Length: 275
Image 1 (cartoon, rainbow, N blue to C red):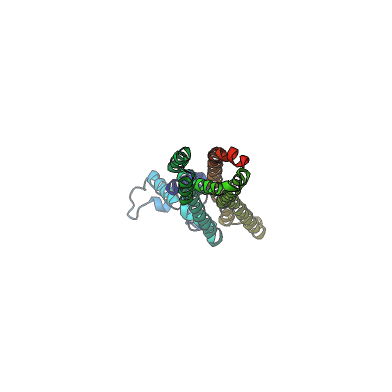
Image 2: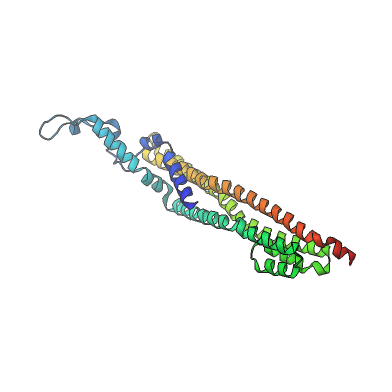
């Protein structure tokens, strides 16, 4: 999953319109006229030969622009937004992997526990069933063990204990996946902050330059504004999507645990009420 997210992020970076990169080249010098085509002096060879083909020069410039695109992006992010987005990306990938590993069927509702516990309950081997549930570290095992331990105190007490254990464990898991939503909501805000900083820098260049502001300085501020917004959204979109998927999966497992536990513990309702 982490490899898939890295490939998707790289695809989004490369899918950003290259026309913007063609307008400004931060690696060109102030006197570079490569956008206007080869000059008259460069068109002639030192020995008076034929001028170099314009198509070849244009292809070379285009290749250079494509190679400098990521460099341009990291330069626009700077030493403030660049490390922040790197940290957010690493935390995001770690949270996604951790939650996908935690919210799995074998960790919450293992099939072997359901089958073994059901066979013991059908055979009325309640003590053995309690030991099996207690030794299992899954959420279903903890809920069933808590319920069976309170059966001698009454059916209502057993049901209440199962609900308490289930709600406590569910709250822990929801808090754990909640950090994924936090990263998804925080990333666009960092991108928006970068947008404001970049636009302020561009307007400052206009105010200081008067009628002829530096196009390169203007482009630097605009690039910071656009790249921070794009990367913030790139981090947020998969985070929020996977958060919803994991949250729905957790809700489905919790519902299944409630149905299974009520089905087994419900067998003691008539016995305990008679007591």
